[in-house]
Length: 242
Image (tube, rainbow, N blue to C red; front, top):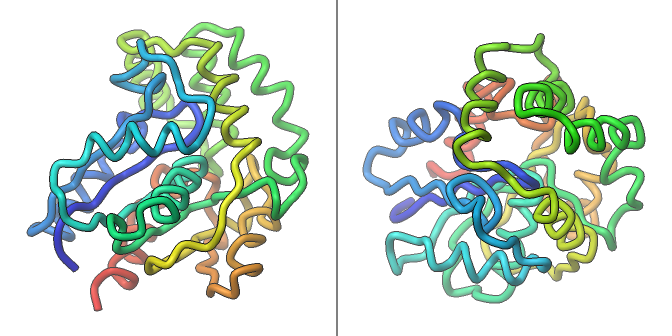
């Protein structure tokens, strides 16, 4: 493998939420450029208006590349939708895509794509201060005991780059109206069997429909990079180092 690796996050998450994982993947792929990308409305682009379509997000992400070579994409949740649409619209730009806990409307119902026991938690997060919001999100995306140091870092970051509630709804609308056809690039799906945010059935629905082998994580939550970066890095190396 050569060239640039793009790291894409999901709904209301920014580059900062990767934690130390970009450094880990850089060490594993020292000859390659690692680029963390935020969509408008998230992270360092929090002051911008979020596109209300996945296609609009793709156009923003493409402009943030550091090279003109084909990219390798590692994407979580809604980030996987962006990666899939990028590969569909611009097949000559994407060499390989790994989707982690990604879903799509046409493959599974809404109550599997966002488990009902999270609805009230999300509303609570949207109306809370930065610490409380990040603590609630941590509890939804992780299967590990809560790490207050991480929550405090997330909260400090959200104060520096405050996210607008209107952007949350625009991103949610984009995710809920997303439709996709199977792209031609090298494609892999990772699904957390015990994801507390999204049903495992929803995350395996796309690869099952497209007859693509599923890489199953049997212990960790929605955010595998947070819960088990060692396992995730090992899995990525098996996929991308031939």
